[in-house]
Length: 327
Ligand code: SAM
Ligand code: SF4
Image (cartoon, rainbow, N blue to C red):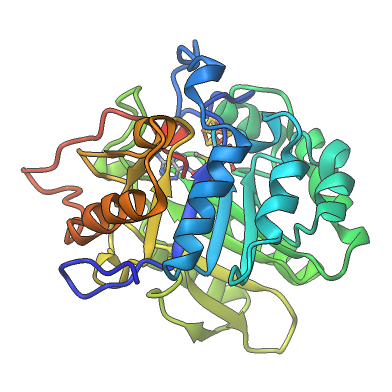
């Protein structure tokens, strides 16, 4: 088991497959982009699968592929297929900006992927472009709607809400969720970008959005945040679809955090806001055996942080952007 010294068990692993991205979201990356890591620095699929197998043997039941933009990594369906074959893995999901989904969705579906989180900050093309610095709303919507051909896929929308930019679209996203039976999730803006774009006053508390939606579409709680980062709410009138609120800043759920992250360059991070990482790539490449790798993993997780310190004077922003951590 992967226990930490605060009594929590790590059961969810996010694997970043690349630090590259075709967007430049204002809250994530600078406009000019970042210096991409050399391909040789990234874990190969073989290396990812070896580590994933160890994590699953140690009690991880869910894996999420992320990035950067994960669909930019060549032959991603090969990795999906390999992960799907891991005995003990209950769920495999992906978080994507959706630009390549229309094109790559069929191969990912054929490889066994059934759970898609699509990031979508605005339904207005001008606002969307301002947010991601690319004119690509229609492309993302095409990708999103292309998933409708597979009714057995779980679809969630991720919207990072920034004050003065998109908080007035909460009801429109809830309407979309009702129309298609999706889950529309609102993520509080976190201090992880490199642009210094974050400020406390830019954070829109999820509760404010929940109340705005509730006034139009009355909501009932389905599950509080805890094992899942999102507090989930359904519609009182029984319409399918849900809304979720990831209130990482105003209502931190660190006490029940069950998530860990593996960066594309093979570093284990026990918290989004970790200031330290555990190198798994070097020992892997030096030929360490499973037992030694497991000891390294267990030791890192035992030292998992109690919680983040956002908005407190001691808070230190991690050096990596969200795109380099794997959000
Ligand atoms: N490129 C993919 C995408 O955007 O879906 C996957 C990687 S992205 C880093 C994962 C998620 O992190 C996205 O939903 C994105 O909106 C979110 N994110 C990035 N920076 C953030 C920030 N500063 N605060 C809150 N969420 C953030
Ligand atoms: Fe790229 Fe995702 Fe970061 Fe946007 S949030 S810049 S899509 S990695």
